Image 1: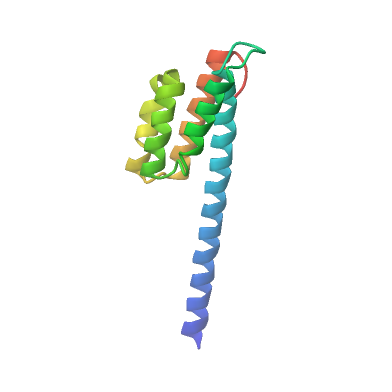
Image 2 (image 1 turned 90 degrees about the vertical axis):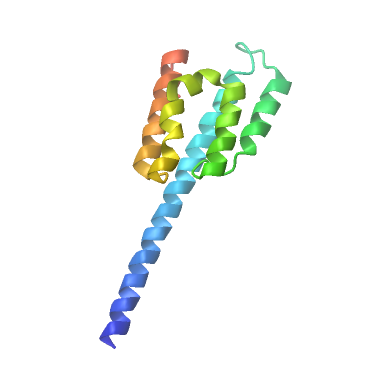
Length: 128
């Protein structure tokens, strides 16, 4: 009986850890998507003028990325960045390329997001 209770406690602990990990991944995904759409808008025109085709193409490319936090999604995302935001690749590409090596650990993902925000702030003169 004690073994069953201990096993149940361990399983509940493991399950709650997975739920937190999933929530972290969802929150990271939402932050990435919001930043990406803002960048698509900024890179699709000057001021009030927006090249709607370029914006739509950018949005479509990034919407096909899926989960950035796996090798396939990261590769698709990097391809979109190369096409629509090559300066981001120059600034943050090395950090992003190392994510698979560290198994997309949340702390490393956060470093990449911070580097991207710092780059955006530097280029645009305002926060990301």
